[in-house]
Amino acid sequence: MSDALVQESTNGPVRTLTLNRPAALNSFTQEMHAQLMAALDAAAGDAAVRAVVLTGAGRAFCAGQDLADPAVAPEPGAAPKDLGEVISRFYKPLVLRLKSMPVPVVAAVNGVAAGAGANLALCCDVVLAARSASFIQAFAKIGLVPDTAGTWLLPRLVGRARALGLAMLGDKLAAEEAERIGLVWRCVDDAALADEAAALAGRLAAMPSRALAATRAALDGAQSLTLEQALDEEARLQSDLGRAHDYQEGVAAFGARRAPQFTDR
Image 1 (cartoon, rainbow, N blue to C red):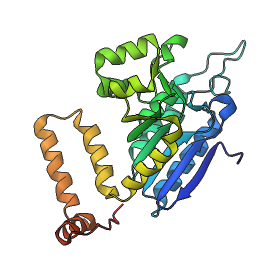
Image 2 (cartoon, helix red, strand yellow):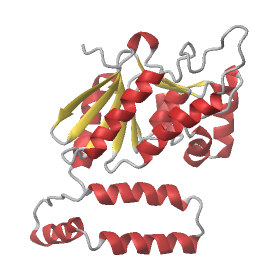
Image 3 (cartoon, rainbow, N blue to C red):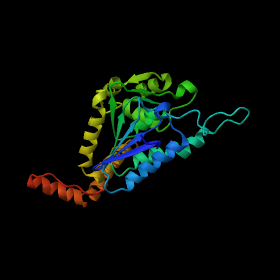
Image 4 (cartoon, rainbow, N blue to C red):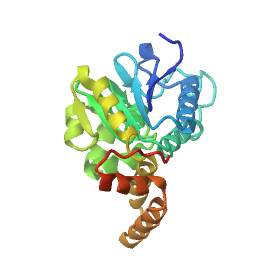
């Protein structure tokens, strides 16, 4: 097994990124942040990549921030570390990178996803979770608020009441319940997770990437728009996409009753 903290593998148009600190439940260090950002940037810049799968090695997806990492670990006699600076330096760029990917990102949550790890998964476009997986908003238990976009994501995904319950109590949420309340797309049997994620990513890779990325941006952005503003944004996006190759190809393929060959990105 590679010693890289983020392993990369490619199968056709699908790039799989695996967080690889299994002994530490794939918790984040400064170096793992750097490697994940580099891997996402590489996938974004590779025209052959049309979908990304993000998963974890071992029994966890990601347990969040490694509290022993020098970036956050308290030092006896020293001033407290500025955790806001850690967020600004590492987690904010990571969230914005995921939200600006030119291709869809599938999270394959293979085990516990806690703290920043839970919200890292929720930042992805489609979240699949193994039946044994769980999600924990662990922040309040150590005197913090949800980060890695947790405050923005949770109420949008499950509503204010459930968001507050998850964030304040920090209880473990089983994957099946996460699916039931709409936190994740789907829960699957553990043994099927890798195949299901690969199949889903393959399906997305065959679709028009540019339109999928625009769909992500439109849905996220519409949360802060009025109805009229959202309608205007839809018109702007359709005007742009309607001039692109993939729309022309999609219509031609529909008329010819053949499979489309999308290439825009």
